[in-house]
Image (cartoon, rainbow, N blue to C red):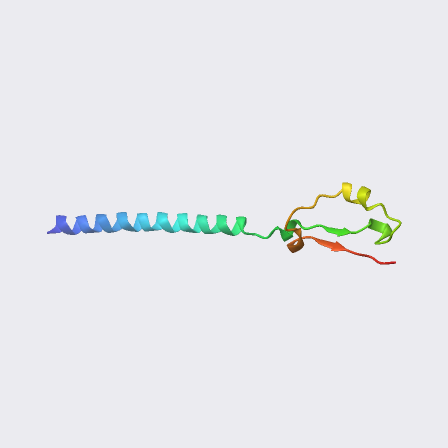
Length: 85
């Protein structure tokens, strides 16, 4: 009978260890998902249209935009600032 009880205890410890490993893996996966789902707004850049010249007809916007990098979907994380003079 003592041998039988020892067997159950051994199985119980084995199951507890497996559950602990599964919990650790789930927490690591949740942390990874959280890091990957962090919004790109952290890396957002505000662009003032025309820089110091502002939004006017005298600005060469072709040359202004050549130094900038824009991506599809930037409206959520990046903003364009129009300064009227």
